[in-house]
Structures are given as structure tokens and as C-alpha cells.
Image (cartoon, rainbow, N blue to C red; front, side):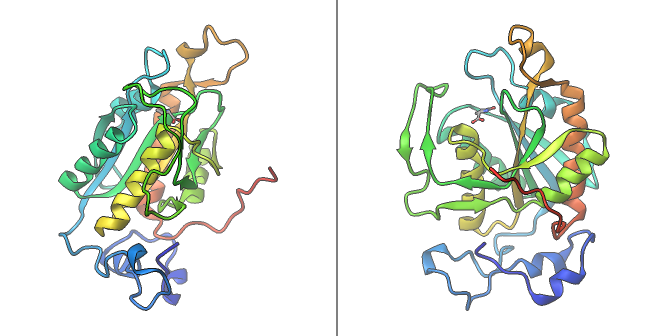
Length: 263
Ligand code: PCA
């Protein structure tokens, strides 16, 4: 990552991120990164963050009538771990999805940003570890755009890691009885595009929010005509997302447990 923790960060696991936790996340001006990739020295320069978690879900796409990522948003409680929950529905459109999310981040100044999207065919909730700087659409988005091998941010870094504690969140979801895992690819469609765009926007603007992406499986009613395809109830997904947000709100530092894969 571009930002490094100070040495003292390790001893403060499991604490609620407060002003001190935020200050540990500041960029070191002397860090050996190209100037155009440096984040602002003071991530709070634009004003204090609010005790808000912004959760986004997508509109339906690909011929589906619903998108469980948005259905989950409508079922979340009003507050999680002391954070007011604000939800936004984003279009399944390259560029426009980032614009809608960025406008919400600017307006709300949330402490956490959790974007949700559908990954039809996956069986578990997936905490995405990384977003890559490429669009490679297998199908047109809802506005008819199908970019192939185009950078999301021409001068941006090749990838961003999620700044949410993905392992703590996955563990918390499983502890809540919800199948969850860390994923190492958010794909190359609008979900990866939004995750990259949100992390890039936050880094470039010095906003200071921590952000990440969770892919959800099909909802049960979506697989009635898809034999052999995994599905999960929207209620279970919502329970998992709530557990993930609570874990993110209470873990300034991620757990050091393996979620690695061999392929
Ligand atoms: N899933 C798509 C885009 C919108 C959504 O919900 C994806 O995984 O890229």
C-alpha cells in the first residue's frame, strides 16, 4: 500500500478507530512513492469524518429482474456499531457508478464505505481484497458500454487493496453463521470498476474513509431457472454484511490469519 502504519499500530488491535487510529493512517511525506501517487498528508484536511457507513448496491443488470446487492441495502438496520447506515443505489454503468458513489462520499463524509455487488455463481459472500485498474467487459453495461482492456484511471496505480479489514470481516461473518471468504479478484466488470474508483477517489481526495467491496451470490429466487447454481437468502446476506460492517468498525488493523488460496 501507499501508506504505512507506524510501529505502534500493531499493539492496538481490536480497538475502535478514533482520532489516534486515523492519525496512524496518515501518509509519511518521506515515503518512497512517486509524487503523483501520494495521498494528502492530512486525510482530514477537508473536514472531519462522520459516524456514517455508506453502503452501496447495484441496480439489476444482465437481464435479471432484481439485484440482491441492492435488496441487502434495503434490509440493513439504521445503525451498525454506532455508525449511521446510509444506502445508495448505483447504476450498473462504467463511470456513472463511480460518479454516484463519489458524490455520496463527498456529501456524507462517511467513516466506512462498503460497496456491494452480485457475483452470480459464487456460493459465499466474498470480501474482495483487491481492485485492478482495468475494464474488460464481457457484456455491455446498462448504458451499452463494453470497454475492453481500458484503464479505469489512466494515471492511477495498477491496483488498490481494500482498506477494510477483509479477514476480520470474513471471520465475523462466519461467526454469525454466514458463509464468507476473502476473494482475490473482483472481476473486470462494473463491480471491480466501482471498487477501484472508490478507493482511487478516496486516496486522491485525501478523504480518509476506509472502503471495500463485498460480492454476494444470487438470491434464491434468481436460481429457480438455473439448476446447480448456488444461492443465498437476502436475509442471510444482510446478516453477513451487518457482521462485516461491525467488524470493520471495530478493527483498525486486520487479523493476521490465512485466507490464502493455491490457485
Ligand atoms: N455485479 C456486476 C456489476 C453489477 C453487479 O451487481 C459485477 O460483478 O461486476
